[in-house]
Image (cartoon, rainbow, N blue to C red; front, side, top):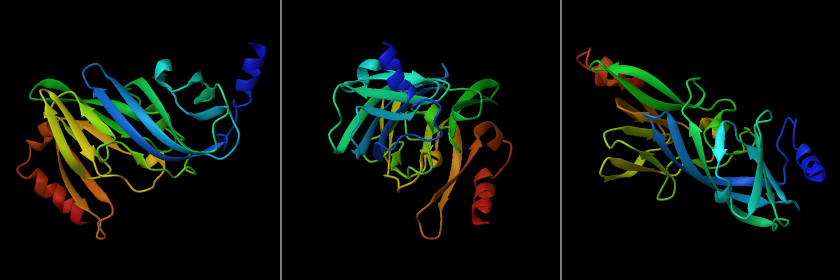
Length: 250
């Protein structure tokens, strides 16, 4: 047991994650529960193992990882260091592989990571969930290499692989990329997004709730811009869409 602890201690208190491997892409599924202020998710991470190791070390904080979901390895989480250490039985094969993790988290009220915001609509309290990942709070939403040096392919809900699940089909779910399609099954809506370009984890954005929005793209069409407005506030003005469009044109 003491030997095992020493193996884990080598990763603690370090300013940077070890460079045993390079993350290449994230396929991320998120399922927020706005009423319970909780969320669950899974992430498939394609990695390129570049050095001999039995460990994968990545960032995670305030997440509960399902031990049985982590394929063929055991895990140990260090809260103070905001890292998750995954130990494999044998050394990982050099080359590209896929790491699969399921997890649960809380929609916090700290305005960082994946958090909850409340407002009133027609006299009733409503919740919406949104993200603020800069500079190192993506780790509060999903296990990842949460350092700007790791420019990977974070995909909150892309083409057929990663999805945002919304418990209420009347909700809107936005992310960095345009929506490819939506599937409604009773009161559950699954939203699929176009694959994102290569970018660091702190640029990933998700917002889910009961709101309206206007959108536009940069002149070259590579960046999508959203301006959202709460329905209760939108009803106060005659042309909220026009006002948002005017802002987008600036």
